[in-house]
Length: 269
Image (cartoon, rainbow, N blue to C red; front, side, top):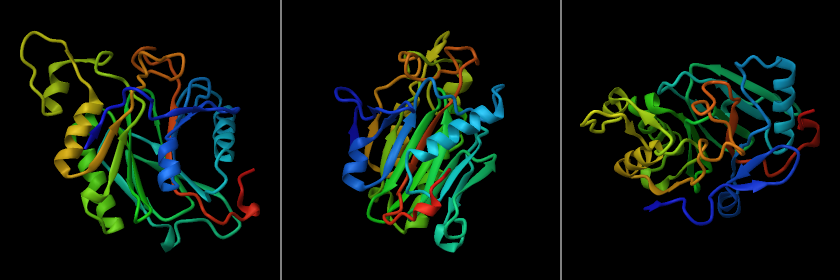
């Protein structure tokens, strides 16, 4: 089932000091925290901004959702590698502590259980949220055209089904805030790389969210929905690498099940 993002927007703006947009229906239905930060709160880890300022913003971001012991972040490379996180096996810090897990060369994460918040940074690429509600398992992918062409979604779905012991039909998926097809003009190598035709002189328009949705439905994923926010059209709200010619910052997409019982000594400072 494919649900278009027209009408009421899937991500709704949340008030507060940190601009962010939340999948409020997912929180209400499934008890999962899911969303993305907005413009004016640059979380780019490999920009020219002073590291102290960037990490100060990351710490402010952490304080928004106190039910997490560990925040996963990393340097994405537009590839198809997916990391699997199993908190029950000791991936979390010791009780009473809170920490970060920084990884290089990873464009996707899957996890099961509570207390671990997955993040990816984006500024046009599509954050793909995967959820197996009954198993309380999640996946978050950073899908640009290269990752889409390399099979990142298939790897993410396979990793989540294996970790959670579920079928693809037990997974729901949302293609989040990113660049729309009207704003994403590409060459023939991008079209053919994503398995699409490139007839005529070009250039072509590629809607990554629609392509990812097609891949998801072919994999057997149900309940696929698409954001109607565009980083190009809505630059007053979001960062766009393409529209800014590389000068913009980065948003953080995030997903995870918070701990139901929170030890106040474990909250980030």
